[in-house]
Image (tube, rainbow, N blue to C red):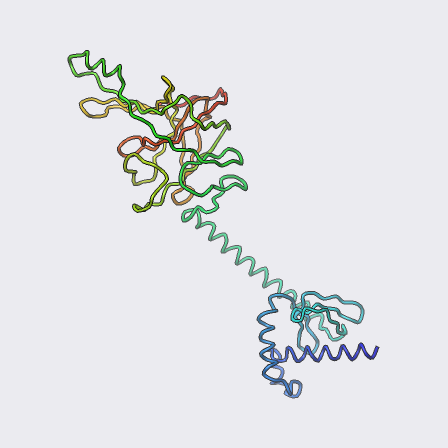
Length: 331
């Protein structure tokens, strides 16, 4: 028993030497010089390292002489206190009578309050950053629970938990032969000419069959020197993309996007079968499109309306699912 008491005294003495230079101890040395006589500057330097490096990794076990141990945890067992030293990483013991339990409890409460205040501050800053982020960047942009928009430019379709890109395809402009024949046979130039914008093939490769798919468009940044993967047949507008979802008319193995009538060199009508669509600005250069009606079975294409007309590069897809709900509205 005497051996254990001697060990405890040695441990307690080492603790006093290690923490002798703390601000609290320096204040005590001014009030009671004899209690700290013989401490060196090395002890003070060691304590400053302990305060800075270990205080944030443990809690205080306050002793009755005013000093404290930084511990990761402690266990009170009868007349002994066993603790894991944050500084030395070993389990040590001291008599429980040496511990100021009331001060230790207050220190625990103060540390918990400081931690809660810090967490609230960090949480508040994160909320502010999150609120500002959508209009600046679209990194990790959520489009569904646990689903994020992939990187890159272009049109994406969201079907449940699936997000995939749509491919851009090139359309052709073809003069209507029947209309041209009418012009030749009529001596008076009152028959307008007609041009059709068409996609090759009767069906798109990509098929979409979910009831309410959503679409996202990521546009290139407004940099004239940047090379974009989104193709445009003429200059873009200045107020963001004007996108229409067009129901295509399948005729003669082709899919017609638009029919343009003109007379005396001026376009007098542009006929296309557009689906009700709503655009949402969700982030910088990122737009979300939701449907105002259910898509019936057929062929479709997203077309951008440029100042000089329809962009000849469109995103096409088809729907095979049968539905009894409304058809596309006439534009």
